Length: 562
Image (cartoon, rainbow, N blue to C red; front, side, top):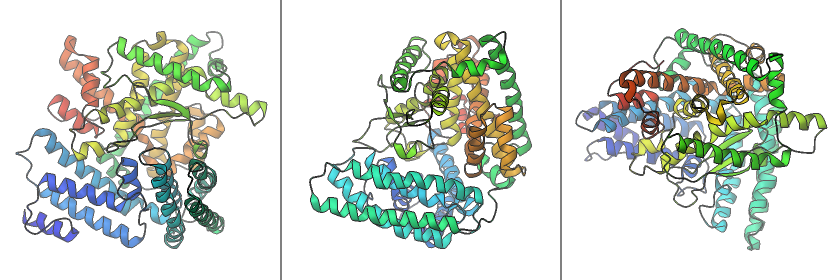
């Protein structure tokens, strides 16, 4: 215990006369994290530092890294054997969260190599103040003005620190900058146009002008930045990332599981294609794309699909819904439309006022050519949107958010956890589960749409490991996406490119495979007494923690991940 106390004192998060306990270490960790990242705190529903941006200087990041090491030492030294099993797990969950943060700070280092790190901080910092009505408009306006005033300094810090920036990161950041400029120039002023205070509006105009000038200067900086370095993180870093999810298998075995799933889903898609178009199965995906609504009917379509999905979940007792509410279906904010087609936005776990959840759908714009409009409508075809609604909302991400808000007794660790594999794995798993259970009669078109999305996640898995651990080029990754997973050339490139910056997008398939393995193991043990609803309820009621701990708490012991 002495070494733990020394580590805590070194980190400045404990008193000499305060014994280290899991409760005190946990509280100190999260308070320090929220102080270090005011933008994250706002997103979580903690509004004590809404007027601040994160300090992204190397000195601040080094201090945070030192603190995390000290916390890890103290947590690892704790004897938690007398605590309840879920609190024992909380300690290990928190260790994994700290490990992932250390990987980010010491190995990935986006603050040194990824200019988008700074753009995302600016947009997240501003949009988190306008997308939820958690405080009076005038109070949020003051916070926006304060954060806009800090954007020039934050971007200047980025310019001073960035080194060895791969060309693909520059390309992505330039596209994201267009969205950031739109947010600052259009979305923010429109959100506060009803403010009667002339002085406040004048201050917003001034801060907007300053932020826009800084963003434009950053854009010019990117245009003159000489590309250098590589995006590839290496096998050791990916193995370390997997370990935080409880996966310690050799990397080649993990990759082999993805290849096996790809072959399985390709065969299943061929069968579904023959069911959709027996004479010309090669045209089945085109048949799917022609099954769409008109642009102005997209949101009403999704609203109806939400109701249908909820009725099916309840009637077939697939999962207990903590509330019979539904998210508000609305258009994706304009500045994000180039990046996403659909997304669920639930309130942070500590939000007490603005608790509405939103299901964003990117609208089909009518300003393009007839061909581009038809292509957009084909992308938003009815079966694909139904599969998307399952994933994003019912019983996917939205239901995860319902469980988060329905369990106020969860520890700080459980409330704050958001395992990539568990979060996305559940949403990906329920796409398959709903078809298995006969949703919409398990029609061939829905099954085909579900399998096409499954293939996309299979390729994300293989591309992530290929790009970062197997010397795969972006061109090779694009070809894999296009020819093995049937993505269009444009979509294939964007998906491959995403993998350079987001290697963790292997988590969609990884999480689904872990859930399916756990389900199969529990079915085998329970036999005829197995309840699908009890399985789903048990999984969701543990929080968005790594599947390793969900398995342990549902079965009483550890077991294989895949």
